[in-house]
Image (cartoon, rainbow, N blue to C red; front, side, top):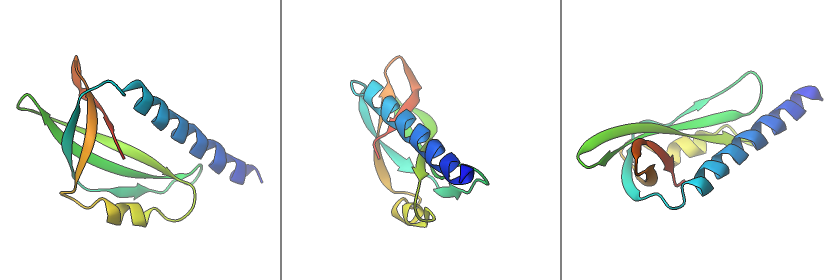
Length: 105
């Protein structure tokens, strides 16, 4: 029973953190980014997380970051298929620190 609760708590924490970052960045500029190679991190505890690394350019400078998508049900393989290498996505970046970004996924 405790293991199941651990999965739900980890999922809710990661989901809340994701939405908090997205709300906090709502006034940041948006640019197009390119997905590098998505993969699933399968943990022995908590929930699985799909990692979607991406790169983007701001003022001719290249930056890279990773979006973490918590998965409660399923393996996450459908997310990996939906975000193949080269796919274009939108991200918001912090104007005074373009290395900080939030994927709009």
